[in-house]
Image 1: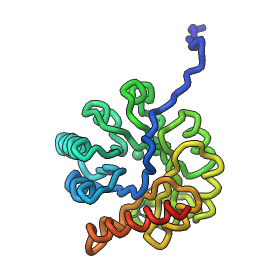
Image 2: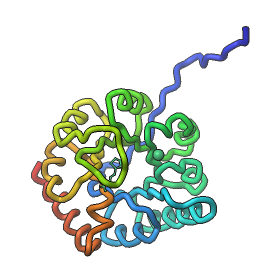
Image 3: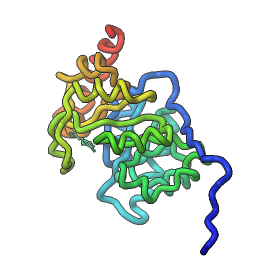
Image 4: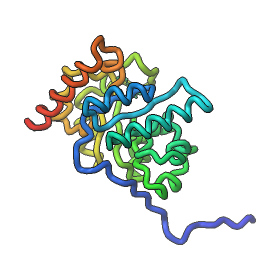
Length: 222
Ligand code: TZP
Ligand code: MG
């Protein structure tokens, strides 16, 4: 029989925290240009989700996004591309459940990147919590046209329920807009992530500013 090596101790991951300030408004965007626009308004958490770029263009985008986020001293999570995130010294990465099959969590932890994980059901949540990520995202809260998803929207009640199970910061995502902010804060969401409500707004700057103000007062009231 081949000999199988089992480590003498079970390995425990524990990813770095995202700091003491709440994650707050968490725009998810597809370019460094968006990142510059939104960080200059005071956004403190942002994600580069560049699904349409490849090769050198992708690497350049990731590199500029990281440089911008460092200039503003903000939390930038790179979606999917964990190797490029390590290579260019990103603050963190955001991964979906399927990415956990291939991402090297040991490398991510060794380089002290923060790790955000998407979860859509108990099974994914149990797996996510076992690696002690920096945050867990839960969605879709409401119907979204941005991504095809087999899961039913879980509503604000789903966020409250996840809150009871999750002992790290919790990010809500999926079909969110300003009408949901107060309820999401009351349900215990630390971050409110969105694509459409910001990137498709007529006045993205004004909208983002208003969103940050509403979330700030909702957090103060809860
Ligand atoms: N993951 C869960 S919902 C979602 C992702 C990437 C899409 C969110 O986009 P929108 O436009 O804010 O509904
Ligand atoms: Mg992914």
